[in-house]
Image (tube, rainbow, N blue to C red; front, side, top):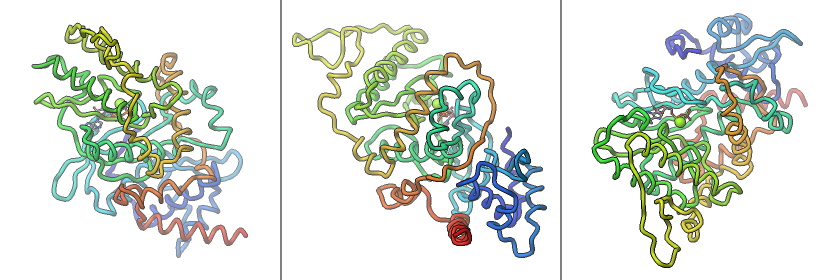
Length: 395
Ligand code: ADP
Ligand code: MG
């Protein structure tokens, strides 16, 4: 799929009204009946069907008439809703080139009114080979109709909350700017992922900085869980920035030590292979050092006295239930990564769950998150109004 933002220019107010109506309808319909879309959109002079045809042409919605005449949002449609909301509130004015394709995200440059370039991450959970994961992730789908749009939104929310908290605690992470739906806006790192860096002036220093980060995170009660050469950015002066946070877990997670050791191992392996570094640390007599003789940090020695950021994050409205949902999804993903053939496919089936937990969104507003998480904008207001109309009609 290509994100052709030029299309945005040609979309009218009516187009967005109908697109928003489809999104709203997805709260309780996998495929939203065309007549419901028409009712929610409430266009003054009718014409919803014509608008839907236009949205279909631009691949913003998908048409399904297998059971009844209905539509659902595509990821592109969801992208446009998020982008429009962020543009409306002045976060950026234009979208530039794509700078990254992650496993489950697309990253673009965006520019603010004063020309500052920021990074926009569009989460796409479930993009990688949905079919291969389906059996393993079925429990999620069956349990309470979680779906990819919802999970992507949750991932964005989590990433935003973690980025802010980590920044506030002095970690070298991008500055979190704003968040809407499955989209996170953050400062642009002027560097390259470590995997692309062939030479370093001071590989030992960079290595120590990176291992120091894993340790400091654990001291704050957190494990990155995807700590590798793809998620560490290096600038020209060899400054290190850590990115990509949706999979982070607490050190109290039942598999914490395994995740921690795996993160450490990734870095050791990479520096050994690429920069030919060898490691050895002299042990003190007590044998209680935070590092073993190979230089690897010891999980239990580190988390003995943690100063947990974990609690602070729990207070951010990102509930334990949400954490649980996203962890289960991500663990499913980790299990299947090795067997995944990588046949990329965009699958955005499913409706927004009826039990969608908006408290997450609103709680975030009241916090130290500066109300950025999901501010009400025109679309949201329209949704609230229309949604309550719809509910009162059906009662
Ligand atoms: P995923 O979760 O899909 O792995 P990442 O957050 O790791 O996504 O981003 C994918 C790639 O996009 C990164 O490897 C990096 O090259 C680029 N990228 C992500 N965030 C930024 C940023 N803030 N500044 C510059 N490049 C970024
Ligand atoms: Mg990544």
